[in-house]
Length: 114
Length: 113
Image 1 (spheres, each protein chain N blue to C red):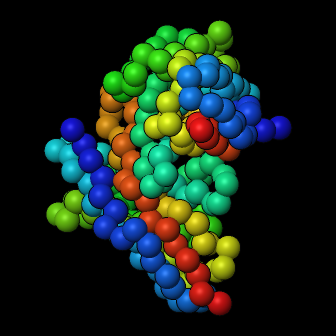
Image 2 (image 1 turned 135 degrees about the vertical axis):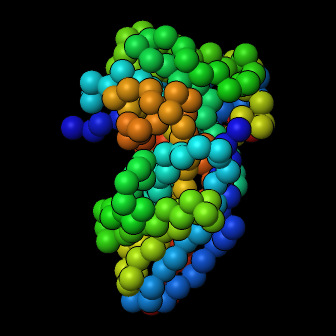
Image 3 (image 1 turned 180 degrees about the vertical axis):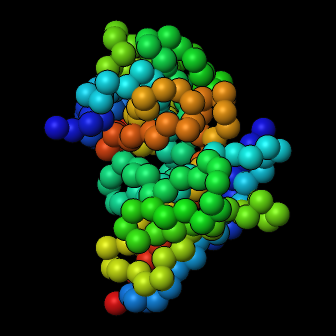
């Protein structure tokens, strides 16, 4: 009965590789997000999707490509991984995109690029 | 653009002591304000939020926060902490129509037995 799930939980890979992180929510929410949390715990939004439509792209390198096959899923594909991509990536969802609606977070995916 | 500052990176308190975590925001209008908690290895969980009305809001786990417009602050308080409160705490601000939250850098709370 997990509300927002992410796979994998841990991802270790080498520079230059391409990897994907998957996110699913079973809350019936319209809006989904990807956040990046760096080594200093700073949390910053990367993307926001509303009903499969991209709403926010916070100047993220185009090596990062989100894909939303349906409104319950928002996957993150990363090409040509760099050392600086090492971080914890959180998926979240909310009923609507307005901040007045609570965001529910997944458990995170710890990406380590070596 | 809105911003959030949490002046304390790390706070240590004894179990049973009171707690106050500081949060200051920068935004012209009345923002939406949030406190989230992140336990080790976990995602973020909403503790409480403020949109309008009573400036003292109650949240889960015995936490409360007070919105002070004159000080642009939204400090989180708890009268008596428990060892299970050890975690990272994030203050966040949102604005109507912006469709995103801006987070502070977090405050790590350590509880001494």
